[in-house]
Each structure stands twice: as C-alpha cells, then as structure tokens.
Length: 227
Image (cartoon, rainbow, N blue to C red; front, side):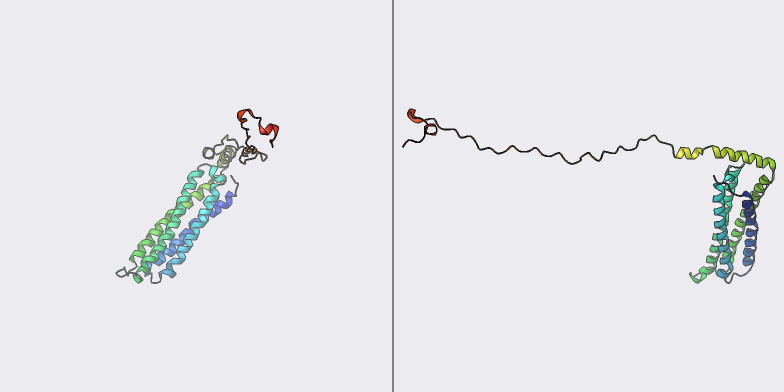
C-alpha cells in the first residue's frame, strides 16, 4: 500500500465533472445541427472523451493501490469510479458510432441520408456523460468531507493503520506458503556413465592328449623317436 496525496486526488476528481459538462455542451451543439461534417464536428469530442477515460482509469488504478482503498467505503467508491470511467469510454464510442451513422451513406446503398441516427447516438452519449459526471461529483464530495472532518479523518487513520499491519487475506489464499523441499542435486563426482563390460579371459590353446602306445610299445613323446 502506497501513501499518496489525497488532497491532490480530490482536486483531480473535482475537475472531471466540469470537463464532462463541457463535452456535453459540445455534443448538444453538434446534435442540434445538420452534422454535415461529422469527422470535423464529432471526432474531436470523441477523442477528448477517450483521453479523459484513460486519465480516469489511471487515477482509479492509483487510488486502488493507496490508502484510499482502506478508508471507510473506499472499495465502494472505487467501484463507482470504475463504472463512471466505463460510462465515459462508452460515450466516446457512441460519438464514434455517430460518425459512422452519418458517413455510411457514402459506403452503402439505401443508407439513411438524414442525421437522425447520429443524433440518437449523440443523445445516448450525453446520458452516459451525465451519469459519469454525477458519480464524480458525489465521490469527490465524499473524499473532501472525510479529509476536512476531524472525526472522519481520525477514523480513516485507524483503518489505514489496521490495513497496513494486517496481511491481505485474499492474497494469502491465492499464494499459500508451501513446505516443499528443494530438489536434491547429485554430486558432480558421481559417474553417470554405464558400467564397463567384464573382460574376456585370455585365449588358451587346447590341451593335446597323446595316444596310448600300441602293442605295448613306449610312447614316442616320452622316450623319443626310434630310428
């Protein structure tokens, strides 16, 4: 958990609603006209809303990893901010669809040549912008109150301190400590080669046996050859 400047985050939260109201006025101005040049009229608004949605997403990510999540109703406020960020991104997408509805007459035969479909998309975009602006006003007011109130600030300090010393139970369940032994490594001196084959005995000539002497004569091998 990182400690951030919540007063600065309150200021950033408070700037989102006026920005959304400014975009809404631009959408209403375009919607009231003929939308003859949809790319020039609608595309800047769509880009502005999409960039704002990206900035809001980054801020929500920062708040979710800070002490803001440990404060009272912190998770509920984060959930509302995530929904509002989605609504801003949806409004940007609806503006892009409004451009497509106005230019599809150049691509398809029988397409609606009137700006009625684009106006419907822009009306839906203004509804999403209004919801997001209301959410950001409410969340910014809550954070400003808790920072200004001594009692609320003292309560939040206790919650933040408790969250800092208490391990995350969900993280403990996901990554339990396992008592596993490391694999045993064999010594480098052990020889893993196959054992040598047994040696063959040396070759010996077969033993020749002498024949017994015929008719009682002595064996020539023992008494020599008679001449």
